[in-house]
Length: 261
Image 1 (cartoon, one colour):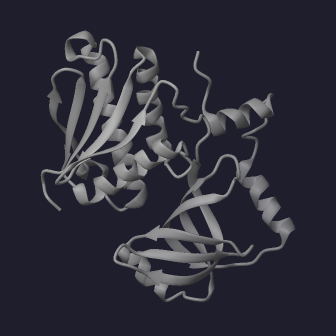
Image 2 (spheres, helix red, strand yellow):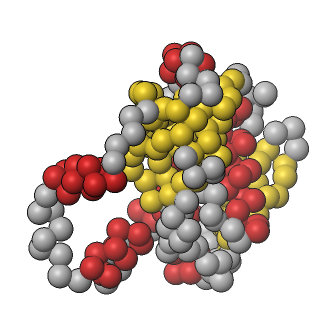
């Protein structure tokens, strides 16, 4: 892929010119775009170090504010950008990771504050318009929850240039997991056997389904009686929740974050 591949955002509307917008706001826009794309790349390539991903600002066009970015890994950042802009165009953000949605909300806040549009383009041989973020675009407050967890089931397939594991849970749901190449070799020795997968999951906050899972380790599956499992869970949690007075508010803040003042 050519090294002159760029991602561009054109801000249009009354008062949209570099001399009329505070430098701090422009800097926040640049940071949001970088974080938005990098987070998407990291979700799809969890073995990649964040510092390797550079969405560098190459130019600010005159007239309306046009921000032109030149990514150092276009073969990864361009597909990520296309998925983000597809979500904007379809008004469906359910497939995006938390950090990407958070950055999009910052961009959306800017468009509402200044009553302007943010149009996304890519330049890869030709300039292509992808999507427009308007003051009316609604970025949802609900987004996937993430954290370390363990899932149980059977490995049914391992492979690919970027290794993936097809995993069938104990309740017969199929999950496709990302995994490092060394760990994929270990997974290959566990085909069609029940195992425990330890790693990082993302759950849909509305359906509570696991949407993404990255495998950090694999161990043999050990069955336990329900009474023993609940006893171990109680010992693990201890008195951590004893001081919570409003359970509904506590759960809401976990799912959606604290309300802005």
